[in-house]
Image (cartoon, rainbow, N blue to C red):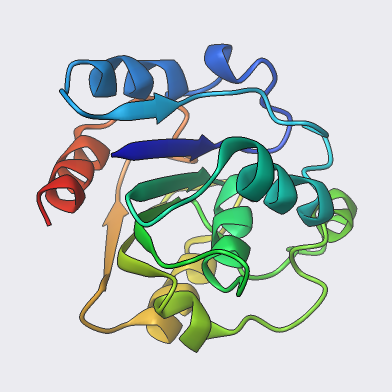
Length: 185
């Protein structure tokens, strides 16, 4: 089982950003789980044309892979899920996800928001998909995640809103619980 963390914009070095190292350390305690925590190319623009090929060709994604995308990394994960060149994954966790560029030029330049989302393909891109969002997220309004949840609802999709987590800069137990469920499936 492989778990790949797709970081948010500007997270470089990744190992010193947000909750990523904490999560990787928790995954090291599990037998048969490899957590990929790597710096990504183009960390301040996070362009789809660079990140998706990097994930596919450099890191490698396969049926026993769980991807975890945070913020801009969640947008990347969403594009991975709808990508025909990547097979169905074990799971995907979207943390603080958006479906629009929020009117922010740097998000627009990331390329994720320059065309409509294919919600059907996205739903079929992983066996299980979970989205976490903070009600008090000051960077990505909760209405963004609620829209995603509405479009993605179904048997393989779960949505959790939390209070007091803002944009998920700190560790939280819920992500470990969801990963455990995905591993057991």
